[in-house]
Image (tube, rainbow, N blue to C red; front, side, top):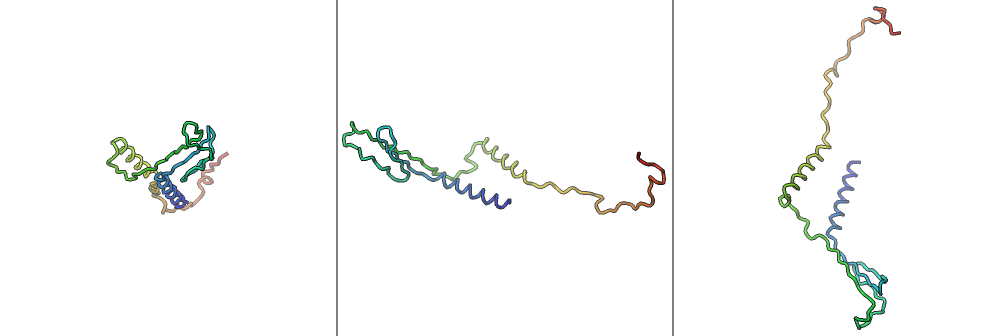
Length: 129
């Protein structure tokens, strides 16, 4: 169970790094105020009503560029003191969550109880009522 959880966590983190560096463009074509086509990674198809005169043109194209992260290399020294303190204390407390407690030592575990020679309650005539 623990191994499967670690493997799925590793895959999830790898996908997170991959998608954080992934950049793409969304191209939208509007005719008036209506969205005619939307395309990712390619040009949006036009409605065919474009005019060469830009004053009378009712169609507009809109491009949204989503840039991915370029730098993935961060060092511990590039963080300020509060961030370093937080990371150090968080990692220390997180790692100590999974430490096992020492086994409890039972000093009389290897000794057998004394043999009962006679029933003391019967000899003393003491009974619970």
